[in-house]
Image (cartoon, rainbow, N blue to C red; front, side):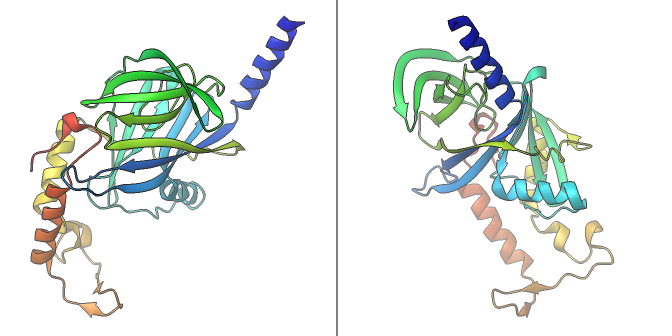
Length: 272
């Protein structure tokens, strides 16, 4: 009887997580390492079978529009604050997607996480969670996972524990992920950006980032290659057309990039 009950529970679990399920995480992080400032946003982990996508709610909305209309609605500028991750756990493949304006790149994440599971168990929300420790991106991480949810995944690149990661933070407390909501049985991953993108290395990303840093408004200038035959009007916060101050804007942007340079992969930090 117990064996039959176990089999039924296992089959129900397999059926439940063969659908697309959504896990919402609250992400807190310090983009400026030397300043006492914290950003916070909700991030979404969509999981179906062995595949998942981790992105912001804005990026997911943009992906759903792209899936149905073939139109891109999200054009982030620069290379900072990029957290879009695609996983195919059956193939042991993790990919970071990076977008700068209309250009999209991918980086294969080959750094494995050697988890060390601790006997410590704590209650987080409705879940009994066990502690684990691992290293990634030049940081030491502490995770708490629950075996009550049979998804061996978690926020950002993190996965591989015997259950869903409910809480995750680095030991310097500059990045913190907390599960705040579980939605079951959603319809689609909207996996539309992981195609025909230029795959690059971390060294390539450094070159692109420094190129952007040297002239962050290059594509907006009248004589730029991407701006041929296209008139761009610059407006202030009241909608009034203004003359662009590229020199002043560039200096301000460069100061921001240099002062807020605390990537999650601190081992790939760029020295501008």
